[in-house]
Image 1 (cartoon, rainbow over the protein chains, first blue to last red):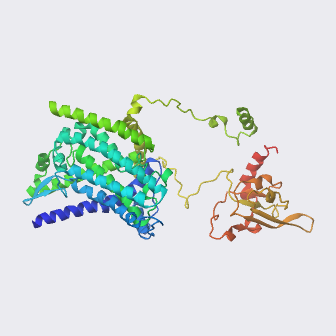
Image 2: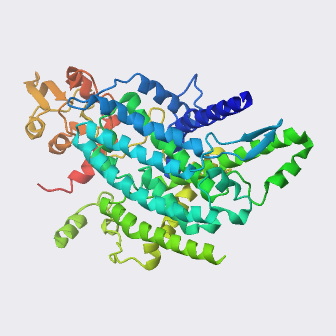
Length: 357
Length: 207
């Protein structure tokens, strides 16, 4: 009982510190530096502590300090309650979605079963969708409560876009669920032990569709029409400042991490190394004793998982700095006339193959 | 219209005028009907990602382990430490040119004052003992100047030119930006490049 409690607390602290403490500030730096490298620039490099710049990493720290010192501004005529509550509604789902994403398998440590996922829900993937839908409220409320035309337009666009892409996303995921026969993310991860059973080989079309829909759900370029800087200033968070502004910003970055985690879990073998089964890994690490081998295997798997996550973060950042923004009608056409029918075709083909095999 | 363009171009000195070939618009693909491969879109995205990814990795290596003898692949100028050498055609803030005796060349004819579209210049003319005119005060309000260069173009004595100075032009007090004659005076050598340049271009224009 006590061991369970310690395990849970350790996992929550680990995931929370990894996401909020590591990924959120570092992604701010990554976005600046990666875009700079892709465009032959140098990027942020001026913030320093005692002349030591750490290739621009201190800019995240400087940003945090700046934001804390800023005025929390609520525009005249805005709905104070919803204006205050909207960033929280945006941020909380972004933080809590990672609870169902497994970042490692099951390990036998000192006679105690360690399952590296905070909440091993048997409807894990549905939980992800539920929280993704909740995030829509945050965006729409932020847009509506600001009493600004930019915000309202951004909120409207966001609501239409996010609801549309949720449909396509949900249908895309059905193919994956049919193949693996489970909604539990730990089980889907465990089933991908064999390299050729990775989701990308079983559902190649599903991966492309899911990744597209996920980026659209996160409202990032090329689907950033809700915040379109050149048209709507900053879209639904135009009227926000200080910490509340940063909450939207953090929600976006945490969603990148969550999307990468889910894509890794569903399509890229979760915590498994390619061509290495759990048994092989344990036998290679036998030199450290039974408990030591399990512990080392746990470290290797967690490192593998986060390496994959970091790769997908890089990929999403690359896409963001490569493609131009879609027009609004193009976004809707892509969703309803291309992604949705393709998702249905994917379900049909998957169903036929599952039936025949 | 095209004939006009050609005439104007041929009037300019080759050093000044832009070569006609570079003025031609680039060939744009007019056919907006995409092929099936392009309509699939995913592969075109991959192609775009390959291009940006190539830049990313080349620059990543260039920063961490620059290959020996290779120049920096980045064009960024670290501004306060590094500065670009500005071309002679750059119009910075206008300055008065001093003659050989150290006094300003200006004869206070008032053409620049009259010409200035922003009304930034105000001159009080006077006469020296020998009957030579000179500006008693020459005030240039840099808060109003629009850097058009008309003053320089209209000046019969090459007494006011656009220098390449651009610093100190953002102040919290507008009074600071009202430059007096002493603050505007520069030696002839310091604006030599600009003088050569205006002789070259304005000599080609006939009013």
